[in-house]
Figure 1 (tube, helix red, strand yellow):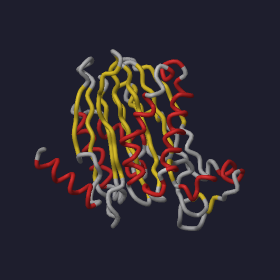
Figure 2: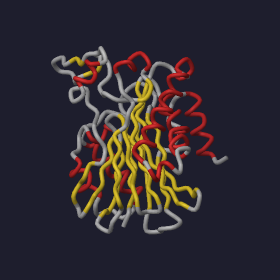
Figure 3: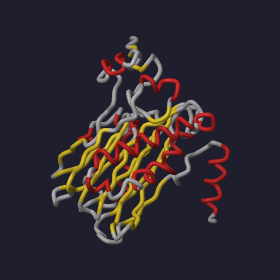
Figure 4: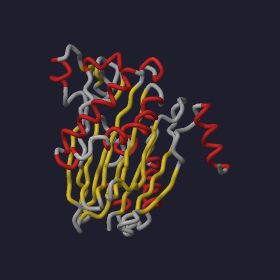
Length: 284
């Protein structure tokens, strides 16, 4: 174990950091022009870092899978940590269904993972987490799913295209009310489910779950020559940058890790106070 890994382990045990290293990068073995990089920055809040991420390539059944995800925890980091360790595991258990009926398979995996989290609420606590996941199959097919407000955006011919859906309470007010909940809208504050949570969908949050969905929106995209790169990021970026501003700020940076750092730096310069996690996947 390296010195940095020992330091990170100490941070995890003491609640001072996420389980992922702060920054890193890698590349596809099958398509060497595809690279990825990630970066994480602790926000200005007094609580411990609540973001976790996955950014890696793996081989499974003669298929190369790029697995990328951002998990933005709230009321603690335990649920986000659980998702980092188990969500893709549950998604990949859906094979071969995931390649045949992709949307249903992804939704099944998200539902099963949320049920596990709720069953373990005594140990994981009352908190929750948003999630945005992306699976890149052999560099040719991209599957994106999300709950909450972490976001997936691609750059296509220089133009930003959002693949995920921001699950805002104001947009899902009727659904929340149909389940017996309510959406608060107090002056100076954002809309919240039952006056508490600022997203309409999330993992965990057992006390709100009767009014809160964990069903993801799913998007499937073929990777063609005009798709240049993918950004996954927590809402600490999207609160201060539009999709196009994010794309424009990194479109001329070739190194994926440097691009992720630049994007977070731009958000911090614009006074984003939240924990921020970002993954950039260069596809060309």
